[in-house]
Length: 344
Ligand code: TXA
Ligand code: MG
Image 1 (cartoon, rainbow, N blue to C red):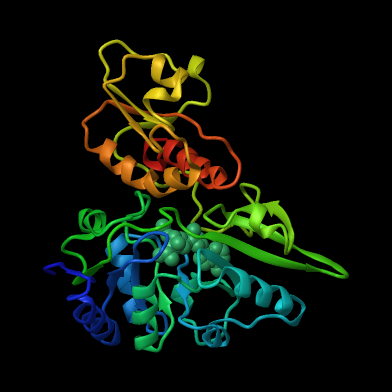
Image 2: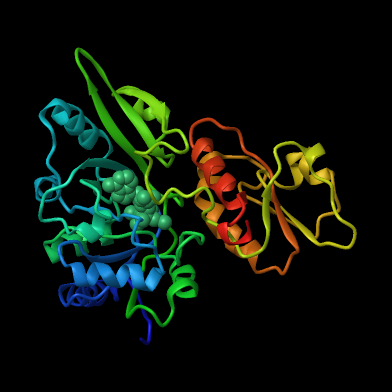
């Protein structure tokens, strides 16, 4: 494939939408912007098209995809919402859709097994990105879309990052600039309880925080090794090619003679102890000066990619406070920091 990028700005908008819809209707895959990260899209009801996603990403087929619906009416085409969680699903959809919340529900028979990796459940969300929604709507079909990166690598938050990951493997990238959230959607499963608020198991921390979800359910974390854990939530993920290590406290870092180190810092120069503890070859801040978690979330994958290209021997990451969005950021830093299966 010659991979084409169309900018979905004023002039290119119509062209981008038409080409994307055309390709999707013909069983092709295209990279589309969402509010979280760029997704690699296919018609969710077309198994041959979905198979192309797995091939392009080199994604193992035990890792199920998220299905995106254009309107709430389409929910019943992909999922069968059990009666005892109907009200909760309505409330969550009301509050958070369109937006970065993914809900795991029993699937309809029409959803191909390839999409769910044979699971009886499907992960569903409604994207809030105007261009994604317009394409989803015009296609008239739910869209299966994982993040548009090769398996195990950093999710792309720009068209240029998608190009780096998938050039030559897909026909089209719709470019709508940088993503607003920068981290993949929060994934939850709902367990009803008689006469009490339901339990929400958080399968993946994301832009919708537990503080926001608490109003509607009791939050529980999915423990590692839990059978019901998202199969794709491997311990090692989001990994740069450069060795990457999250250091929880400065005293844990013992530099090796002659090695070059970069610091992925939270606030940067004014940030204090991590910046001061070593003569870094490079310091890049997630939220320069101010330390805002929302800004750090948006910039995280971008900065990881940028530092990956500096030719450093190792990237050292400083922790952020584990509240609100910080939970999702720390989750990504830990996974990027975990040993890659191939290295173990
Ligand atoms: O923000 C996002 O969610 C982005 C954009 C493109 O929508 N998508 C995304 O997809 O991050 P992906 O494939 O990179 O991550 C989907 C995660 C995987 O970890 C997968 O295991 C989990 O969702 N998942 C999908 N279906 C599931 C199911 N039925 N049960 C449990 N986990 C599921
Ligand atoms: Mg992914």
